[in-house]
Length: 223
Ligand code: OGA
Ligand code: MN
Image (cartoon, rainbow, N blue to C red; front, side, top):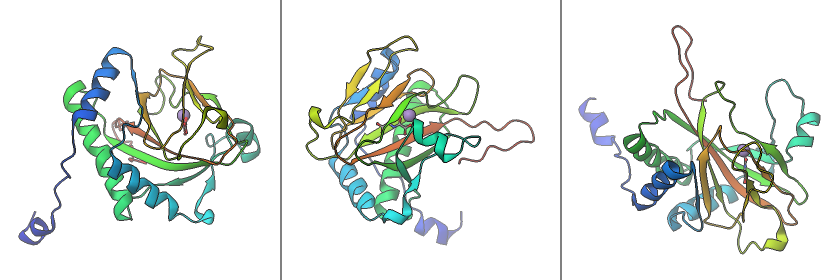
């Protein structure tokens, strides 16, 4: 790094690590962590500002993998998504908070998390995401999932809960209200989950920490 680069070098924000410690403790004991209203307020505000600035045209119908067409995908998931690039100050703040979480988890659990990707998701009334896992054993390299919620005063009668199942056989699961400031972290391969249809428009942010899948001559890009 030369002097000029050094002068413009922005160190990582210093974030309160207490919440990261809670997450790590939960991951060790159960593999998932539900943080009810646990998002720091300035992160929630940054995400809301960022999300509100996205035009309808920037949201794209979410797919379910390369082989499927959107008609097939629609039966599985009905949300529209917009990737967070960090081009706005608020988006960059979110990504740096997640990076700080990644570093904390790596230091504590040696998970070797290598990159993070995340998008806003919007579910219009009636839309859902059927039961699925975010990664399959031995495939892909998403290892830790993160979902955060941005909806004011969400009621049980609004529906739209995230249902987290504890294994393939679990038919009951645990419901999480998608309320502003609540977020969930879980091991991507271990927990099937679904989004129930809602009566109101539902805004969430989904993200995944990945390990580096590069082997020999084949490079695994972060996205
Ligand atoms: C996903 C997902 C859950 C939610 O995007 O993979 O499971 O509550 N989202 O929005
Ligand atoms: Mn998912």
